[in-house]
Length: 92
Image 1 (tube, rainbow, N blue to C red):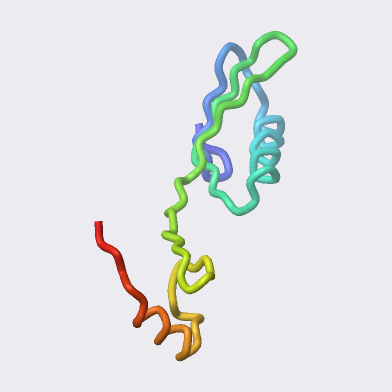
Image 2: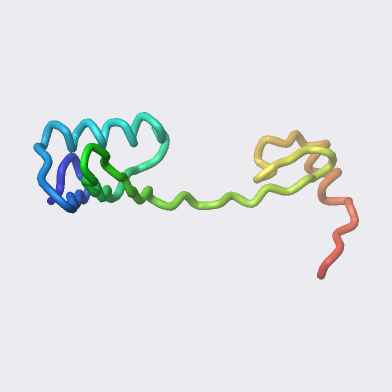
């Protein structure tokens, strides 16, 4: 089933929509900057096991340039850009 744009599977029993939404809210509170794609709830007696999948986030390359950890040079001033341009680059 699909609830709040999340694919939800309930295994080993039944669960009402309100309780499912509570589990969805719990995961979204734990990962506020992530997108929840799917949630599997496995009922085991008095316990519920949650398995969820979040949307993969792109990895930004970070380098150490002139003593700073940066992803891009767009925030460097002209002097720092010139320093980066003039440095010796070692190729592998």
